[in-house]
Image (cartoon, rainbow, N blue to C red; front, side, top):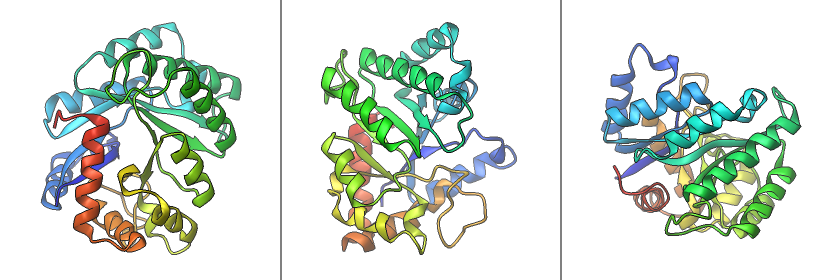
Length: 268
């Protein structure tokens, strides 16, 4: 089954002792493609280095809202340069985080909008981080997309498809993001006992708008909660999606991998 993990932090020091073994376990579990997600300049560099080393990994680059307070012209220039690398397939993870507010909200907005502009200039897809900021993220994306509709062919002048990373909402917010043309990233939370609203949203969402992700080493699915997450756990997420939608795991694996190839390209 051709599983794809569209959101990993495999460069994280949580894997320093056994990164090769983690990747080998992923491949043994059928996860043949992975995306290493940048969440700041250092992690973007690390994600790109990993993607350059391994043909089964591609990268994204971006500055997370937690680090927005330090975003400056030099970082912008480095991001722009990295975005030209063929192993970089999206801008992200970027967005707004009002849960922690590690950066002032004005700085978060400025950093977010600058990187949305970079996505429009490059035609790259966008990976959105959002926490307790749904209304403001929705407003930014709606404004950006009304000015620059997504470019299905990756052409410049408009961002590529937008992925809502770690979607945790119910049917109402799923409908809003889908109406904007966004993809929904489904992770370990879909396996949690109390995630009925999320499973209902997954049930209602078209299969061609869903992607599977671990967000490893975070958001570990059942039955491994409390332990370090890794891409080999993607089949558990796929099984929960399949149950919610009344499909086979094979159907979910095939469709979500096709979606990932459409969004991130066929470089794997």
